[in-house]
Length: 196
Image 1 (tube, rainbow, N blue to C red):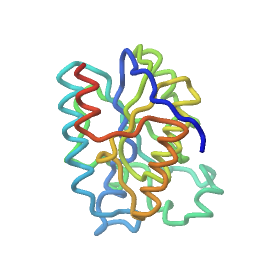
Image 2: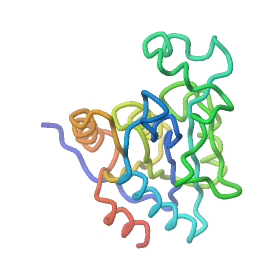
Image 3: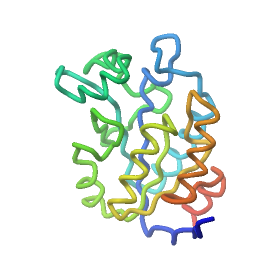
Image 4: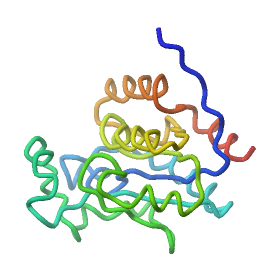
């Protein structure tokens, strides 16, 4: 078994909400979507906490306006073609709507960092850690958390604030993320850490 240690807490965290867009949160409107009220509720609590302290908040959404964007990813998972730029499916779910000044990063791949200016924006915000939340644990959350670590950021994942259509994949990916790439914890413990 690998030895794994808890990360030293960051001096300043940003909240990074991954793909909490209608296409992923509304199963009635998208095959990608699934009902996840507990994930929404956890993210609402985190938003209140981050906004109260004036800490940076960023969102990601997947959107395409060109057939050449992420063409192999879209070949593998054709349902992604429904995420058309400007459509209702790529809008952030109204229950966790960005406040004025909060940035929504449009991405074409799984990671919020790949091909975007997210890393530069986080550096400009003076953060050394990110709280990664959203959908889905085994896909875009994992990819974003891994790239955050590879960007030398301390990664914290509140388990109640992420979700996946596949419960087994959700649990196995949280276990693996915690072992190798991030600190995965209970929402209340993460909030207490942020308040410390």
